[in-house]
Length: 362
Image 1: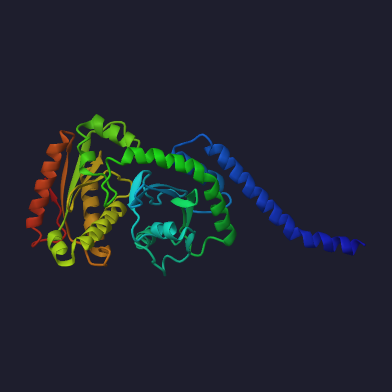
Image 2: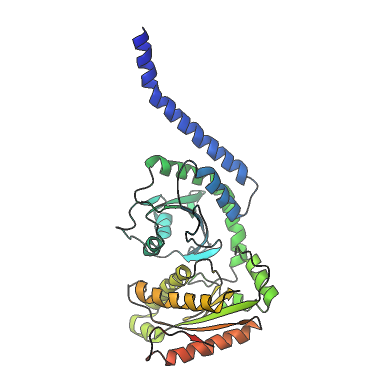
């Protein structure tokens, strides 16, 4: 009799473990729903996901990407679990074309890559690998049967996520979708008039909303940019121009030119993590504002943009040559700073034949 009872107990042990795991999953999801029930702030929702789910699924970065109405780009909110690990700043904007996000929207299902070192499937994969990411899970967020966003979970270890991990993340995405969809609608209202339709960065109209210190901080407060800046003493302005873009358009056509611009915008984002004040000034010209940046920081970012453009290239893998003018000064009227950076850019363009790595400062 005792032997039979022990056999029954041994047989039920895996079931008990499975039940305990399921209880832990349900408890975590219930706590998450309670923590996010009244929140319409995407960063707050993401923080709750990180805190409640991370004990069950170990990860290094987690993000929520919500698409805008036309489906050309998405708004990124991302957090990390390790100090010093690079991530996209909350409110950053990412074009969807040729990315895994586009694939998830089209296929309406989860995408997993456990070996980023060996397999680059999408436009963003080389950037992620350069940032030490090895494994990534991308889970769609649905509303009325259509994907409107993606939850991304990343690890610095290859082959990191188990089948149970992925299943839990899919459950979390299902339960979060309603709150995040409301957050998406609120963000859309703010961004529709100030975002460039092709690249997803801010447009020239948005730049014209900024005149002085107060209007810049107000702009950052209003347009889903997460920041801790209370006052601005200095500002760096980067004026960036793609070299020989007209020739490229004439040779390959405007559609290919558009794709080149989109690829270059991705480089601007990945080369300036944490800096979200990127504006398409017109044509192939872009402006980046760096509040309170030092002269050295501005120089470093400008050099990183040029190096990344040459190394990573465009959508065809062709190197991108760019000219960058930088102004660093105490805050004054923004239009004057932009004119100064623009003049510095054209000086640098003329000197390119003597130094391919030079960045001109005004």
